[in-house]
Length: 175
Image 1 (cartoon, rainbow, N blue to C red):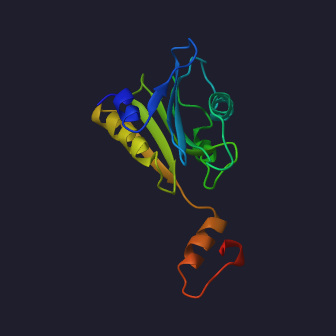
Image 2: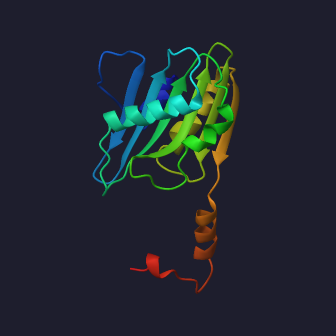
C-alpha cells in the first residue's frame, strides 16, 4: 500500500496550488472535520520549531476551523536530516482541543537515512488509523521506525481518573 493509499483510505486529496511538494487531504462532514498536511521540505536544516510554525501556518491557510465542529489534523513531513531539536517533537502534539486545530499526530520521514519518527496524542480519534497505517507502511518498506504517544497532561489524567469514580461529579460537566 502506498502513502497515497493509506491517506486515501479515510481522506480525499484536495486540489491545491501548483506546489507538488505539498498535498492536503481532508474528511469533512456535518459533524467531523479532519485533515492531513503532506509536505516535502526543501529547506536544508530546518529546526522542529520552524517546521511546527510552518505547519500551523499551512493548516490555517488550507482549512477553516469552525467552533461548532472543531478540526483535528496530522502532518506527514519528509525532510533530509534530523532536526537538532528533535527531542521537542512531542511539543507539536495537542493533548486537548485547540481552537486553531488540534494537532493529533506527526510523522517525520527521512528517506535518505530510511528513518521515521512518529508521535501521536494519547487519545484515539478518526485519524489514528491513518497514523498507524503510515507507520506500518514505512516499517513494511524496511525503514527504522520510532513511534511514540504523547500522554495526558495532569488535568486530563485527573479528569479521566475522577470521571470513573462512582458518585464523583463535576458541576462543569453536568447538563
